[in-house]
Image (cartoon, rainbow, N blue to C red; front, top):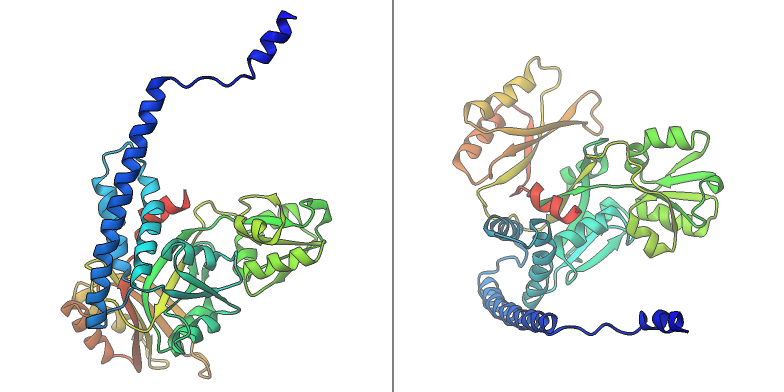
Length: 381
């Protein structure tokens, strides 16, 4: 009998002491102070919005939003974790930006794709994110004014460039106005969640390539099928019981799938770079990249060396060089160059002007603020 009373006693609620109540009351007071400061920030943003409207400035300013997070990280004395700052302030920025105007952003859909995650991390929950079926459709949405901005994958640390994005970038009148760096962790998922049920594995070509070694070990005889996006693969897996998709973990929730295995990518530093495209170029931020595409004269010895020499002499560092075949011109190539600096800077202008005399043609694809890898690592945490 006494044991029974003792067992029931453990189910009785524990009384909270006065010290815990006092601490919680103090937290409530701080929360109200935070709310008041948020409203104060919102009123200031409304004033900024009116100023932008009078001068026809864009609502979205990638450099400003990057620098806000970086300055707060530098000023943080703890114990609030640095890794939490990007999450919190991206949503604060998103909510107050919406007071100016809700930003519409096209991305390579459907929902649950890595482009969707990149757009959501960059623009927060208050932006209107619009899924479209292909990379050319992202560009078309921006060019025709259906959305303010677009997000497309352009490069992965494991598999290199996304050629469709590079090709479309050359043809488009849209400009690159920001970049996003996002750690990519691939999951294998299906309706049953059982590896033995898998007869086909579907994903975007980059997703399949990023998991090549894992697939060869675990599913060597299974057919691999390419889809337009990782989320399209998840949609298919939700419809067909023998299909497994390689995609983001959030796709399992969206499409009602069971995860077979997490983190199947071959490299743990697997990162994808996305471009944000828009109609108007951003102003210099002090830490920018400029993307340029050049065409060289065919079969001219040393042409690439002569192209690159002006950048060295004018002190302009090159961040990357990629080549692509020139459509309809066999054995001729486009050279995509990312250089450090903004096209408005005199040294960049001088280097480009000299380089222009040594090529057939060139086009500036955009000058934009460089992404903060620290901020992106915080968002990936």
